[in-house]
Length: 78
Picture 1 (tube, rainbow, N blue to C red):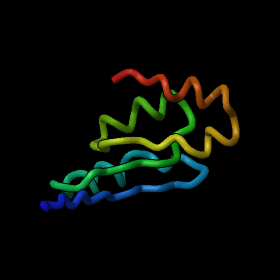
Picture 2 (cartoon, one colour):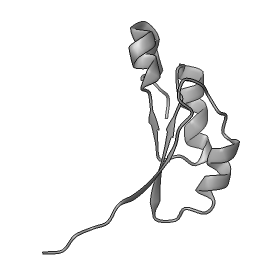
Picture 3 (cartoon, rainbow, N blue to C red):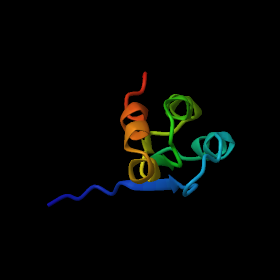
Picture 4 (spheres, rainbow, N blue to C red):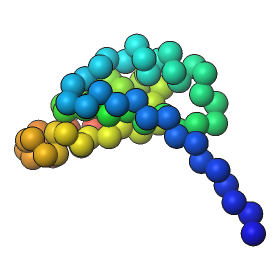
């Protein structure tokens, strides 16, 4: 049996948006690692982060605090 190792690097700013500078810097050194970003609570932020090099975004706090904003945030343009 053959196993694959999937490495993930998680940038988390619980409850706030930390910008994209850390993501840009981190993405330049990660070749075989999935880069995840947290702290997204608006469509504008959700559309900004993928351009900075992240592989996926996490919309968590927004889900618990404002369901309407969550529904709007998860409809991003890629």
